[in-house]
Image (cartoon, rainbow, N blue to C red):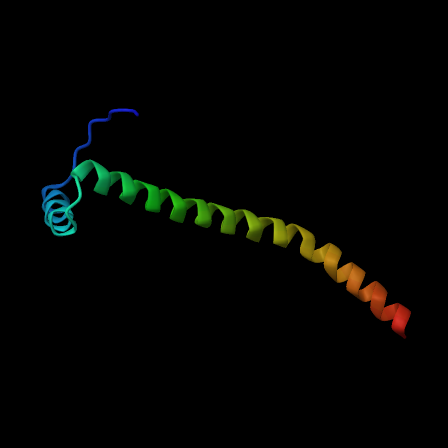
Amino acid sequence: MKTIALKLDDEIFYEVEEIKRELKVSRNSYINEAVRVYNQENKRRLLKTQLEKESALTIQDSMDILHGFERLVD
C-alpha cells in the first residue's frame, strides 16, 4: 500500500466524516472506495470517448460497404 497526504476542503472533510460515521467504516476505507468508484467512472468516460472516435473513423467505410450491397440487390 502507498501512503499519500491529502488536503480536503473543510466542507468535503466534514461530509466524509459524517457519512463514514453513519456507515461505520474507517476514513481510509471510505476514501479508498470513493477513489475506486471515481476511477471506474473515468475509465468508462475514456472508453466512451475512444469508441466514439473509432466509430467516426469507420463510418465512411461502413457506408461504402452498405452502398455496395445496395448495388448488388438492384
